[in-house]
Image (cartoon, rainbow, N blue to C red; front, side, top):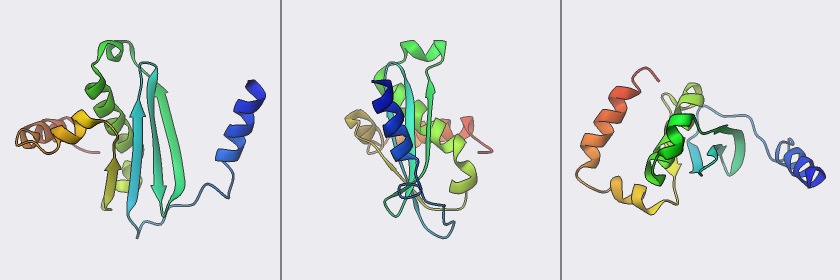
Length: 121
């Protein structure tokens, strides 16, 4: 199992998969969360620019799924803020409740709270 994991890791981080970012083009962030941790991928032109992940913090272990998904978005935006500031960025989710949150009228209020919490990113 370890050999397969190492081989996969090597293949996913080779030059044929990874690309250097072009600050004149749009970015796409894919992310996911689980009961173990948060993971995200920064892409451009269907090529990977960067991967990021982290384990959950103790206080996050009791979060409901939609809060973990939001934590993954915030994690990605913080890590890659130097690429994303001033550029267009599409954030892709497969989580239905987050898709719903962003279509509700209440999303404006929640977005303002999140923006206040992340000022200076």
